[in-house]
Length: 113
Length: 114
Image 1 (cartoon, rainbow over the protein chains, first blue to last red):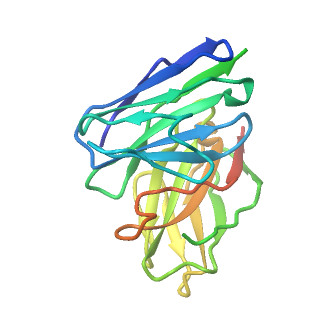
Image 2 (image 1 turned 135 degrees about the vertical axis):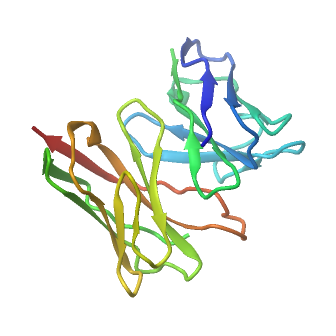
Image 3 (image 1 turned 90 degrees about the horizontal axis):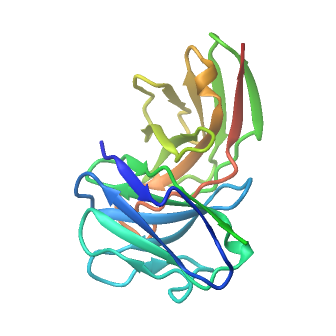
């Protein structure tokens, strides 16, 4: 199994600023993902974080708004840029190794005022 | 990935079996049925997955119909800690652009009562 930690666990930010969320996995994994969960909603995939190359974004999400880095097999960051209140959500990191199981971090609860 | 349909909510008495249904009538031959759950304020947790045979692990059992158009997740002895949103997801395990991308629907809110 893999244990995923995220920093920060929560934050309150002002509109127009940016926040970088860190995701650390305790073992090497092949795939890492970033999800968003808006209040009262299900999870929506933002992008697949690719090691050593640009992330692959899902429809409706763009690199300028959600730049992602993945420098190695255990770490990734997601930046939420130029934030607005609509960005208030829980952001979750996920990872998948050699098994079929996909693991999730505890999430980062972001509130934009 | 095939679309799945689940009831929005279900109730269960503590100690009884919870049977959560899922319809996936358009599932492809290479798509597995995955179940995850999300307890309040936590990240989703893997429960079980299967292709066409019934599966059992320490958490639950998964019953898949012979035509693979539907499945049932069984929690044999539900406890209050099993109260969560349960997601049924169809996913191909290898190959294709959707590999590894879990698509979450609205899931079933299971409430276990004392």
